[in-house]
Amino acid sequence: MNPSSKGSPWWREPYMWLVLGGPAVVVVASLVTYGLAASRPDPLVERDAEAEAQRVGKALTDEQRESLAPAIKARNHVASPER
Image 1 (tube, rainbow, N blue to C red):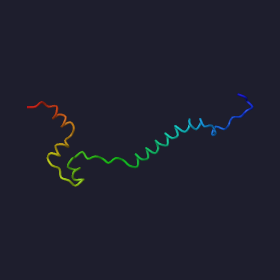
Image 2 (image 1 turned 45 degrees about the vertical axis):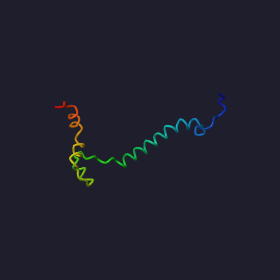
Image 3 (image 1 turned 180 degrees about the vertical axis):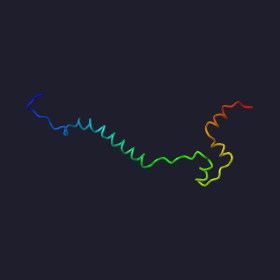
Image 4 (image 1 turned 60 degrees about the vertical axis):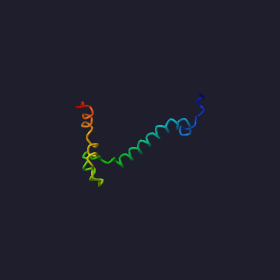
């Protein structure tokens, strides 16, 4: 390269924008994602089926109460031998 010839400034080089543009887009997208997640948190889920039913204004049937049993109770019921 000839030392007397000057190249163009870095901001006029298209490859430099490709090198800086990709990570810059990812940083901006992550900030937008964080902003959305922080401003709209997921609602808490009631563990008590009766309280959840009262919250939505419905009465639970016995069948619905059984279907909302905790996972361990349901797992143990399935894993137990038949009598």
